[in-house]
Amino acid sequence: MKVALIGGGGVRTPLVIFGMQEAAPALGTEELVLYDPDGDRARIMAELGRALVQREGGSLRIRVADSPEDAIRGASFVLNSIRVGGIASRAVDERTAISAGYPGQETTGPGGVAMALRTVPAALAYAQLVERHAPDAWLINFTNPAGLVTQAIAQNTGAKVVGICDTPDELFHRIALALDAPPERVRCDYLGLNHMGWVRRVYLDGADVTDRLLDDPAKLVQLYPDGLFDPDMIRSLRLIPTEYLFFYYCRRRALENQHTVATTRGEEVARLNEQLLSKLAAEIAGGKLAAALATYTAYINQRSNSYMKLEASGGSAFSEQAQPDQDPFRAATGYHRIAISVMKALSGSEPQRIIVNVVNRGAIAEVAAEDVVEVPCAVSRNLITPEACGSLPEAVRGLVLSAKAYEAAAILAAKTGSASAARKAMLLYPAIGEWKPSVELVGEMVRQNPSLTYLKE
Image 1 (cartoon, rainbow, N blue to C red):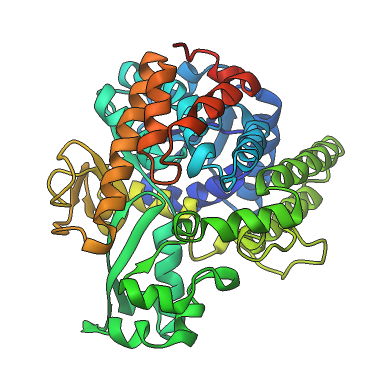
Image 2 (cartoon, rainbow, N blue to C red):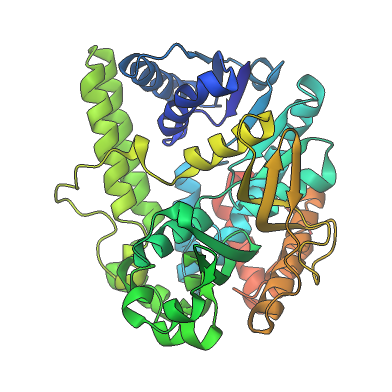
């Protein structure tokens, strides 16, 4: 079996390669083909991947394709993990948002709008290639904003698409740790959208322990990095939010902390990535593959351990101190874990209940049937069936429905190139919700970003 990874030059590619080689016997995967417009980066990641496969005693073949058609043709699964404009565009987006008085974050607020407008046209083009060259393949979308991009693909192409994100799974893992129980004994009742989801109920060995968890401030603090949410806020909702809701519930705090450190995570990631790629290129060129793997492992640990620190506490996003000695490849959670779980389930080898982004089809009562939501699904051979979640809790209903209206407007703007539709999307978006700033924001985004020059009045 062949698997394609579009965006194979991304820094998380070695994690995906590790997961693929680990699951190769169950999936029958023989070849993983990487494609990235930046061929040099794809080749660096491929070399790291080959070193990983050799270290683990695997036989997975890794190849870099010269074209997306070559990568996709005949694949059983196509993983979509693109970043249009690279990390430099993220840094610009976040800085633009902060200058306009909004938190700078790549998937929410003005940064999320820019990312969506930049990404949807490219994602649709790749999905159309999947339709043409691998019509039976499942397209597994990692690309952010994952729910919006998955909806654009589902509504505008014939590709079989499912969106994935590790955010819910990471929260479930933290809930299990707070309950001092192994994850397999904990079941979470979850619903929402990508980067806008909530746990409604928590069950331990089948018993409802939600109130026990909600009424214990010490346990609630354990669920998030750096005291992200006030336990009193969580108790007032009687819902446990995923971490990205920080940029809705704590916007002033996020913006103040970004002003305090005078930088954004995107800017610091860009700096760290430049150092990483330079060092990896030198080590690989010198045949020092073990050193390259050690460099990469340290990078991933540094990046993971710094997540949300800047926005939540105003501290440095990336500490220069030594990071804990962790094995990120064997971590319990992560995109590579979710992707492999979905692939195993869809291939029929391990049917599972997984949180994914799929067409609603009545799972959430108030959301249109054709819209994409993030809900638990029964995933089995070539089939994804969303669980019936009922109605949205009153405390979050307006936020979710406004966000869906925003997503529809943003997709329309991306398809038509209408700057007016882009401003309407910002007006509808709860993270912005104003008309006047949208004029300046769209103008600045187009000026700063070559990928958005298609937007016209």
